[in-house]
Length: 359
Image (cartoon, rainbow, N blue to C red):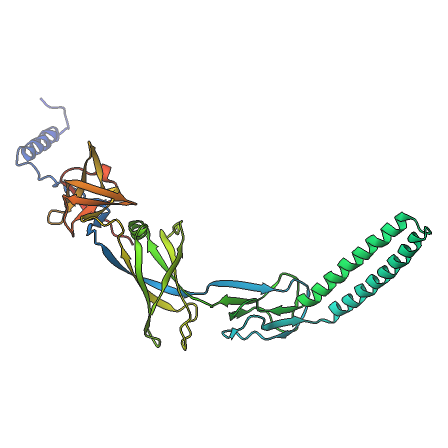
């Protein structure tokens, strides 16, 4: 017997819903999502033949031997300039002068004081020889004579410094001040570039520099296209030993004498081709040292990339020699193979990988 006023169907509702759930669960299981392996991003490096000779091409920029800012060492008013930007001048060329009147007056004044000091010294020296003057008075006169001489020499130097001359054959790069400007000592007036030689600056990656640090440069040529459209023989000068913190490249300088009839101004773009000779040539494959995994007892391997499956597999190699950040491998790899060159300790057989591409 059911409670008064409560419909029977209300009690039956939970049982109906439970039955529907059980029927649904008794059917086929719902399909689950298929797990897709995420490839590991790796740095891959191609291996190359250890050729006896190798040629490299680099973009380059024409640079001056040096760039200097000239300044007056005295203060005054600028009253003459001969500084036309972009022109070539000879050593000793008068670039600018200050108003010389104040410096000339100072020279005359110090000359008069020095002349008076000389007369006083001569007078006391004569009296001292006659024992009519004290040694102390003679010493004071000698000191005053030396002081006035120094003052005279300084004023003459200041007069000379009121003229600014080119210290070497140069290209006027930039004029920094105009006539009638009052300038203080040390204020830069003009920027000069030494173009007695033509230099080519290029950026070389750490990989290439390390691979050729002990090799000999056979020849180098610089090609400048455009209106010039010529190739010039150049020679190596120097390179930096610390890489650029951003690009991780080294600056390398090549040089040549200025060509006749052609003006190569700093800033021109060029291409430089460098041919090197391997002094310690040994046949084999060049592999980055970071790619090699030591196995003990003079055994080594690398993680070789399989392009078909996009996976890596371990490949045993025979290392002939190590030079810088690279090794020469006799066997185990072929030209064109690619190997993992960073994070080799995180690799395992058949690992799915993805090539790292720098943005």
